[in-house]
Amino acid sequence: MSEGSGKVRVAALGDLHVHENSTDALQGLFEKISQTADVVALCGDLTHLGLPVEAEKLANDLRSCRVPVVAVLGNHDYQSGHVDGVRKILRAAKVTILDESETFTLKDVGFAGVKGFGGGFDKHMLTPFGEDAIKHYVTEAVNESLKLEVALKGLDTEKVVVLLHYAPIPATVAGEPPEIFPFLGSSRLAEAIDHYDVNVVFHGHAHRGTYEGKTIKGIPVYNCCMQVMLKVSPEQPYALIEV
Image 1: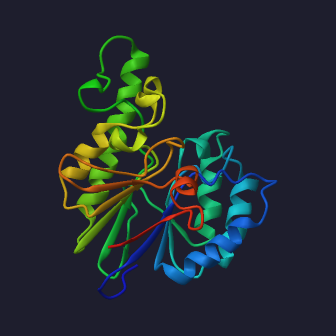
Image 2: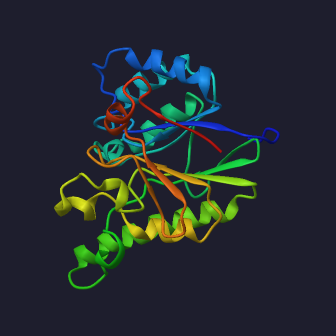
């Protein structure tokens, strides 16, 4: 999808954790967002247990949204082994699920995204040494960063927005117990991002993390999971950034 050129107001939020008994509170939120933003960016953990009934609930809530919606999935969306069903339901609700083969363009702003994975940050990144289980873990992190590179390489737009679930930098997970940092994100994602002319990055996952940080290259990164946003801006529990 491509529409003209100019500024784009991105409303980003993540970790909705919609479950089948959720109230209809999100309908009002999406309606409010539609009045101030040009596109909604959902940063994973859209469902609580990755169940189709939860995805249907979110799809129903999204009916009040009058602007395009782009999203990546999170670890919770994989929990019950129904990730393909979750994707299908959300795509039927006109949500663009970003991955290495699918991007989105609005007013010459390109959106690329993947779920991401853990592995740690900077000099503390896990390396593929030792047991097969460790090698598999690192391989998953590497594969997610490679998928992001493929998506970014495929964009030909003036500006670029990256959407993740896992964090690409340690600054935006600060506030979480240091012991779990390796499970909250990976600097391999930041390496892929800094290789391209990215304007802004949004992620979720770190519920007790920090709202804002930057990559080594200086690209702004926002942890916009709802749990953080409710502390930063209770009246507006989403990041609203003009690109």
